[in-house]
Length: 303
Image 1: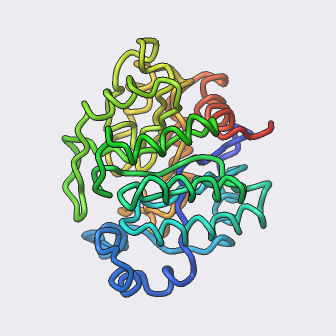
Image 2: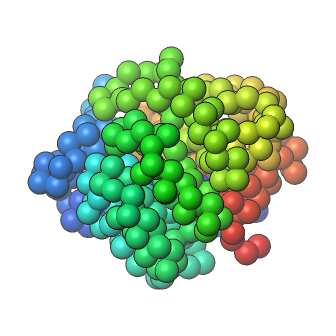
Image 3: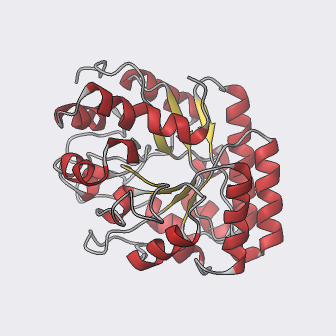
């Protein structure tokens, strides 16, 4: 496969990495740390017996970025059920950002169900350590109300810090898989209207459809990332979705190290997904927005 060079600057806004202790033994770690849901989702195997995802270290991520021409990756936390696991991942990410400030940004994850004070304190610590957003969170998976005081305290931090919040969204008509959690569309519509001064990034194309007209009151700061797109939609999603919301509302994201092309790729990679953007036939300006500018502005990157 040829490398992707048509667009000079790319930010992958949806990437996950895990500490070595998780990578070495994902299932036993999950069982010991109360994260059985994560284990079901991240250790599945495809019909061809290929794993859903791999567990690379940071050096392997950087090599994959180099092959694809990705300038920067945004590391997203997982929606852990235990607050101490959120803290573990945040410390891990803070170390990676310190070591690779020119290549990596990172968002903090929290578990609001453990208490608003604890979640807010964790976000302040993460900010002091160089993290620059919140997510990927999933209230429906983590067990707290989207309109509850605990989550509202987290959103108040996002407003104070001017941080984007990345939220997991499941397509109501999408594939069934172990660990799948329903995320009703109306919940996100109410959230966007209640928190119009917070940037929301709805993962996985927001479940395949925009919440509404992006210029409508309440949706001006709602964005969508493209994580796991080939596993959920055919390549027509790029043109169909962007014709509805505009190129300035979409952040390119791969969901690496998820294997987006398990039928044809043995390992997760970013090149083929970038080629989907190129094949969609957008203008140079729109490509630049989707692949770089939107995420760069959202995370406050200097460019």
